[in-house]
Length: 341
Image 1 (tube, rainbow, N blue to C red):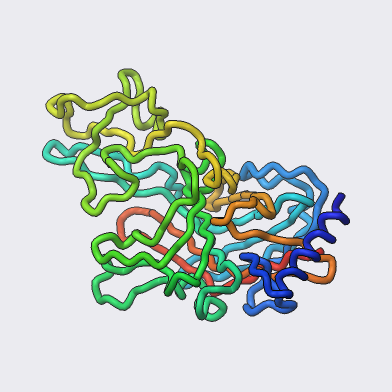
Image 2 (image 1 turned 120 degrees about the vertical axis):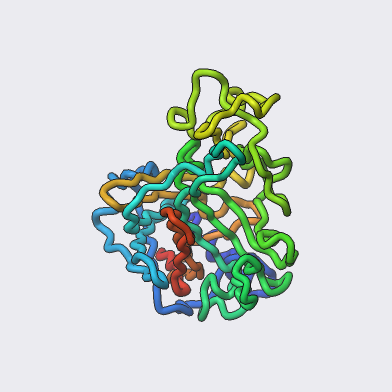
């Protein structure tokens, strides 16, 4: 079965060489970046639960990926006939896995700190200009002296990306990594306008928001936990554990309500990237996986080729949401994933 799929991948890439476009299939025989993460074949059954207790991980030396001003990130990868897996570890002295809890101070509502995050931005078909030199910074627009006006967007419609966005708390509820992409949308009033969700339902809502992204952030929650539940006991409630707020006079200083609540697991292309993380002794351990080729146009397809390794470029960013602000974002140089036969 494995031989058949390898032969099939070779035929697909031959088709590409003949001039038919296939997003993500890299024909280069050499990496375009100095940093490389190898992915070798395994027939071990993988369970990406954040504990990294599979035998194969102990046999693989991690690739060390430095970040600008932040912690080194250590990454391993393996693949089966159908799926690809990653083990990612990095130091973080504090664990932030609850997102922006609403808290009333007696006068107004405020949001608490956000959760820790890690994102991987894939350059589909080597289409992003200067990605092999700048990595994620090729799509970071920080020219304005006002940091609030900085934004991420591709530099044109021909540039295609795939963005895996892990969130420490949200990701562990159902065991999925948020699947997104960047396009070239630019809106001065909405810095995140170019960040699009893959097709499907994300499975969660923001308390107080009428839409996933709003130009003017809400100033208070619109739902509260049902009686008997607290933010400490239920930081990520389901929709049936929430009820509408009919009067704000009931709240007293120090009262808290969740910022995120769930209506179900992600669906369709939103459910492509699966995984969980575990924080222990000042370190995050994240395991994630995905089908090599999901068949979805908004995803980066990966292929195994008997004739030699295939390379796929990505950049990595770690977000440490330790209080007090500012939030710390650390980016890696450009990196190549090498999928070995």
